[in-house]
Image 1 (cartoon, rainbow, N blue to C red):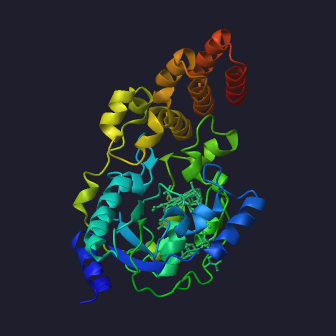
Image 2 (cartoon, protein in one colour; image 1 turned 180 degrees about the horizontal axis):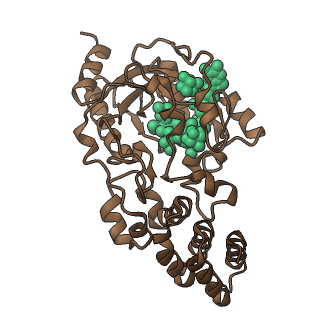
Image 3 (cartoon, helix red, strand yellow; image 1 turned 90 degrees about the horizontal axis):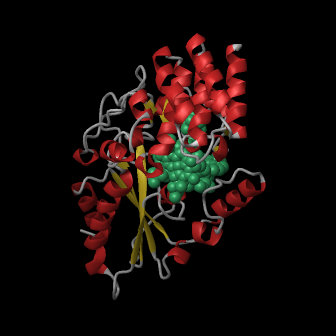
Length: 371
Ligand code: B12
Ligand code: SF4
Ligand code: SF4
């Protein structure tokens, strides 16, 4: 059996759902796309602008000969938890154990499997959404799947509910250049359903408008996006949920994903200490931004759900929370919920607030209620 066939058999045995190989040649077309996006202000603010690193695997791993791309499905339950009253929506990839670690461990096993086949010493680098290389471009060129107009990579039989990881290696493996054609046809459902119009065209996203970014961004979420977040506490799956190619997919059970996340009551989340947060969310991919970000988002979602039972907890934070950002979003949420109790809490808070930005938020919230 050839090395590539044995590698694929081993990959399946350690629970990887799909694997393909591409060369270490630079991604020239993608470099051009990234330059265009940079000029059009469509480049993610938080990603390196070093295009040599992003588009040339040999810059990241000198002597790189092959890029192995692996996909792991997280469609591992019939009914991932959808938003319920006061619990908010967590994107499916974050409802399980952190994919960075789960997939990294499997790619590490692949690297060890390949080591005896290295020319002299095995030099390799693993990346799971934590480095500069373009994982989806590598997956496409390796023929692992096709790309939808929502940007997501679709693996036949698994849909888009996959996370990707790459293993750069100095071992030469056979590969073909495939880049399968998109199967979207004339469909545009994802473009039409994006709440923030972040899909500015087929295969083109404005990263700064995508709720996956907005729910992770530091600081104060701009007013324009707060209502559009709806019940989204972390991430967004809308452009995948509406896609016909994601309907009726068989479930892939992976014990490694652990117990499905139980999203806590948003009011409990609002009041959660960092230690409690780590105990509940430490194993998931939403942990890295810390309790501050989730607490801020919880206030916004409570405002969007309009639940009057949340007024007491929000009012307490508008008055006493040490973070001006938290006071500001709680004020906004009270303005959205409305009612006499919200109005009087805001008026009282205004008497004590010294921070100009928070005062402005309180005044806007009072105006929204008509107080
Ligand atoms: C930056 C980033 C983001 C940013 C910006 C996304 C973007 N598309 O630029 C934000 C924060 C918004 C984001 C959001 C999400 N992300 Co993200 N993200 C990344 C990251 C780190 C880099 C992506 C990037 O910059 N690509 C560069 C551009 C050039 O590549 P591209 O977007 O694939 O663009 C292609 C198209 O433009 C296409 N193209 C252009 N013109 C045309 C024309 C035609 C006809 C065709 C066919 C194609 C085509 O060619 C380009 C090259 O392939 C990758 C991990 C990595 N290191 O690669 C994860 C990654 C892409 N994200 C991932 C995920 C899961 C998400 C979310 C679903 C998370 C969520 N549920 O909240 C959302 C989905 C949003 C969406 N609709 O894209 C997964 C995607 C898995 C998959 N099945 O595709 C990745 C691979 C992480 C991982 N390791 O699994 N993400
Ligand atoms: S993840 Fe949500 S906000 Fe981002 S492009 Fe898809 S539908 Fe739009
Ligand atoms: S919703 Fe339609 S256009 Fe969007 S990715 Fe799916 S098939 Fe393609």
